[in-house]
Length: 59
Image (cartoon, rainbow, N blue to C red; front, side):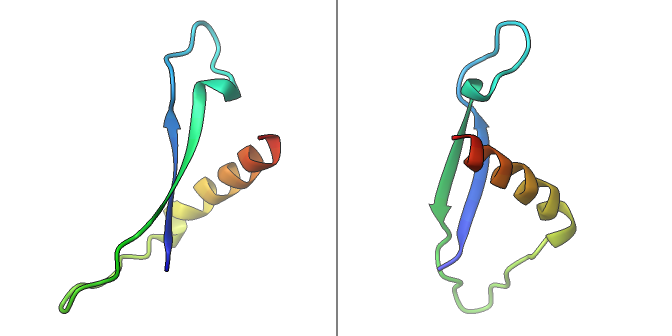
């Protein structure tokens, strides 16, 4: 099953944003139903994947 990885704001930063102001949320995506297609936005996903991998290393 594929996963949806999101970096969400956990609390509003006071001053400059810190890593502790964000949270990493991973959710399984539901299986496709008949007639549905999966949109793969790889050019947009690549920078997010790089950022996510850096955040995971820091956590």
